[in-house]
Length: 179
Image (cartoon, rainbow, N blue to C red):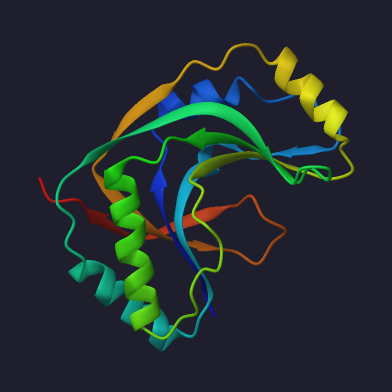
């Protein structure tokens, strides 16, 4: 059974800039820059028939045009029990439209709704046994975060190996956005 999700690839220069924020936080499992991405819709483990249906329906998805994405800040998920360090994405109309269309497609195929409010981001590290104070100190010491902007001209269907998270991810299909 493949474990699938849709996402946006991070260009090499943006990935390099994000990778400069790595290190200096004990208890962080840093994501390899080659696995940076913005998840659009987590699908999960599906059978091969459902996977083929997903590929077909995503191919039929009409997207108006390419759009820009801006990574604007560093943040942490988990509050008092930090679990991930991320680069936050400004939710642009093009990004939100793409996410919403994919959510509708997945539900039409019989998959359960995602269940969480969509919060676009790039995970930089998974955290375990890291105190909020240590994370705050890391964020303070990491320096200014200068916004990173790039053009999105396609989205992809990724597969993930059964692991703890963080990759490696494989691009199964790519879907260009209409120009």
